[in-house]
Length: 258
Length: 246
Image 1: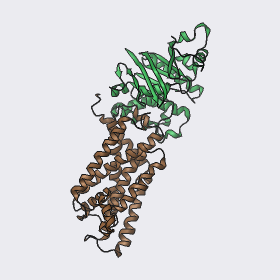
Image 2 (image 1 turned 120 degrees about the vertical axis):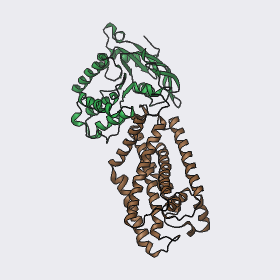
Image 3 (image 1 turned 60 degrees about the vertical axis):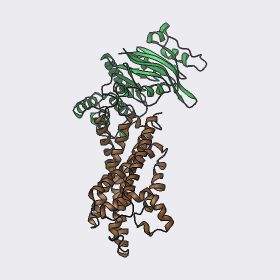
């Protein structure tokens, strides 16, 4: 095998192992995020939604669903890669991978595909919940696929970065508590950013999470507040940046190879 | 062709030199003992050979294949049974072997019979579906050995393979390793059980403070009726001026 060719069986096995790890603990990886989404949709969409006026001409529950779905996708993709890589480092099972002919590129792709798949599975589950509430629909189906896959990719790569960086299980939880959750909430998951005070609106427009939520909402309802082209550019730019950084760190062996 | 050729290997951790200008070669088919105290640089050297650690200077070739420039082909030639249980403790032995074979690019049709053969060989069939973490220390060691051999490597590196293993299994493993060696496999063994090294190995190297202090045939270490253990203690004493003896 040449060093430049792809080890397809190795890559396929890597992804299969990641998926097996995910489905080994379904309550933690699948059920819990779906329950959270269910309660968000029920409380915010169904219960509070009756007292809230339509936003952008659509019922509140339809407005909330895309944001909740994207938040779930983000959390799942990030948790998959960050916990998997950190767990491998913590138990030194990473050495089992490092001694094999897998390239850094294949390892990164393997972890990232695992994150994308978990993000898509959880996203599909939230979509089913949305259907049960009569709130799910597609205005632009292909945009929906685009946002689900690219945002899963972005957060899977971010999870790889966190999995490399973390030195404890507590640190693995930190990005979710201090970055993902606040920026998601401030990105217009539950409200239009037009409802914010002017200063916060400026912040919302430079918050990338706004474009993730807004794009998904546009794909499902046809309603949008941001610029689609700018949103797509931001997503691709962040993916490119993260891919380059993760590739560089794997190449250097940072916190991987002693 | 040598099975392993290490030239001027140096590995530093900050200011600490873990391996210092180490050079040695191991011939194809040798059963080679690689000895040293804890922290002497044995595991670091093994990690450099297998790709777990990067090294700062020098070159390593496995059957003439450079482990850095042509790492894919080099790693296919090497199997490692490490000292630590560096494994997914929730996976079953069958899954562990299945995944490892896949990482090495073995197709399912080649992998399955090989896994069944190894499970049988290491008497793991009745434990094949149990979680690794639930197995006894001896069974865990067997899984590590089976994992190291799943891709049928030409060079097998065994880092303390019998640590924590009962006497019966140790003897069984010795027999199996001798069989493998007789079948042409090159084996590097590190162990603190020097009687094990004395029994199995034909050549021995001793490393101390990152430097090679002795290398030669087993008979050179045991000449004059001496035990390997005595020679080893002489060579690894802290007050010894470490110059390589042959």
